[in-house]
Image 1 (cartoon, rainbow, N blue to C red):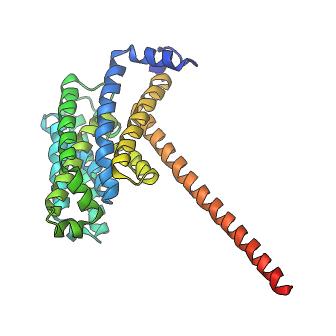
Image 2 (image 1 turned 90 degrees about the vertical axis):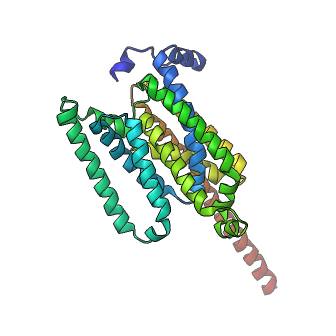
Image 3 (image 1 turned 180 degrees about the vertical axis):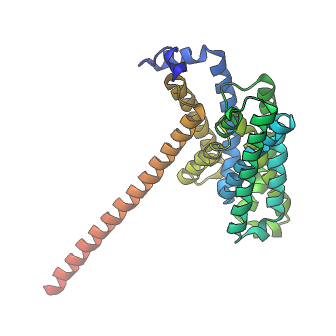
Length: 313
């Protein structure tokens, strides 16, 4: 809120407001990073929705918190710590995927321990490494820092994102086949298991780089909600991927603009807009279904009354 008080106020001239926002270097940086991450997260997120692996994404976002703080304690780059932790857990989930089904209690217990380990690393970092005794680093990991990423992390995010998109485009067709009907895909010679492991690695890397910008708590919203919206609105996979990417980028841009003129955290604004969009679509679908049922029942009653009148005659 303090930042918002020293910035130009929001006006009714949208184009002018955008120009004012982009006149600041940190906002141009945020728009660039946000656009890149939105594109990658939305494309990967569509396959997460298609493969019913939302729980895996949520689990890896929890692991990301611990991995980033472990890297801080060990004195290595937070992105390196994120990648090591999330990829290791993702591969374990991919290898033991079938064995883990039906073991929700055990999985929940392990994830709770992982979060507790993250809190321990946060305590060690604030008390013995940083020497500041504050939880600011933990807050940055939880909620991200898209407005203040260092140049080396931005360059790393751009490079990794390009690789992710290229790899995803290369495996998109067989991955789509394996996601829709794994048994038939396996019978046709598609390496379903290898694709599953490869996709888990892609998911882990996506969550790792997005955590730096939007945080471990809110990365799930950027990953899942635009893809879930696209999955509900269109049936064709290619069109759904385009719509998912478009929605994610729009939510990110609007969230950054709302954050700039209100002073609220960018990641919170982005995730809130995505959530509101999803609620509106789901609520609209529910109202249409309800209206259709009421219309159908009314028509059936009218038809029944007509038939009854004919019989009485």
